[in-house]
Image 1 (tube, rainbow, N blue to C red):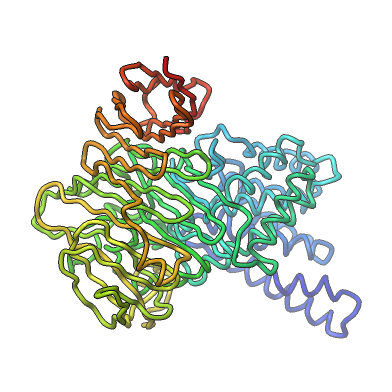
Image 2: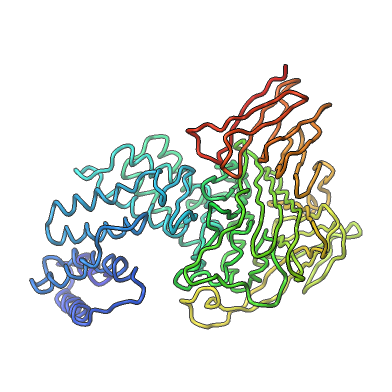
Length: 611
């Protein structure tokens, strides 16, 4: 393909043009005669025609009748079918065959098949929350979704001004997928690790984020409203064109179709990825993600620069992915049950509530004999992490990983009113420890046994991505994790302070965070005038002023008293099964109906006035 592009680019300008054409014909002849076949169907039906199709079109006038027939045979490996991005890829290959054969009807049919996927009501593809699913109900932002958006943006620009042009509605859907979906998961030119799913390739965060710059340009050239173009320009400015320390795109979003939450302040970003009975957490395909068994168990990443986790994966302890609670063991990470298998969580209580600025995300973990109730509250100051009801059906120890990232500067711990350098590994006994590393503070809010490490590690990419050669690489990693005591209903409470300083971490007033309860029944926290609640069971809680609130229906809630007798309530049903959430505020019943037309799991906002 590179040779064909060069031939057409230099056509009529180079003395070696005829020699280059001869080389291309010889290369094509080799392919036509040997007919290589891959064991992976994708390459035979999608990958190979997708690469050779442009070659055939670029060299169309130079192909002999025999070569053209052989080229058509290669392209005929792709036929209409399948779903989601695979459907788009196949149709795109058919479109190229139609151009090669000058078959207008076939090109029209391929175009119609391609654009038929630009909709939000399919089982796979674009979802109502602007995430993207493939291989079942599974978030595929950085894999199939990115390929889909890249392809569609290309067609948007290619078809513009022709009879094949996208409709205004189709163009609006693509623009929304970028602005309401992908814009959330890129920070300063790096894609969130939680968006990569199984594709943990070298520099994947940079390459995948960079491709979105071309997507944005194509969508702007295709068709975009003035407001969309402004937002797209802001997206490019924030991530690719001389971005500054502060981001103009801030807020809090829970992707209810994909069990994923993103929080963006002006100076940092955080994301949480979960799984449920509804949503697949991750997958193993084509030897991608051989160690990713825990990647959907509440993985939490925080970013200031964007490169905090870039290429850290060979040095990871894969049982201590940041944010997860899992078994402590020297044994290999549990294998997927079969090749091509998916990972789910055996509970439906997974969801998040938000007012658009802050929010609370919750997950009942029930996997591999381990249970836990995990909640995260994100504000523009910090991420508060709560865990309770931690128990396992084994004698193995259990840990909760606070952090595991590339070492960037010193790891410090605070004691005796001073910061101290930590090198190697050290166990801190049951106490409320404070740590600082790489613009980020970590504060344990309850006495916990914490292990902190700043150490050199070695590893191999091929151990989790089978396509790499077995070469050992070295790096430095900072790791923090809690060792839970072997007792029923263990718990944890800790703060992460991104974009912070040593001084702020040392002096942070933890008494400003009122943890009312942290148990397997309810996790409730008061921050200022907002009460955040994850109610796993019906419960009774004190209000900001005199009185109480009785939560009759399990769910995730935010209560804010606007004035005497007036409450602003945000609520969601994590199970996505209920039609009504019921409360009693100071003896007065409050019913929050889930609209039949609203996506299940989406935050519902009501204002309640007491009598």
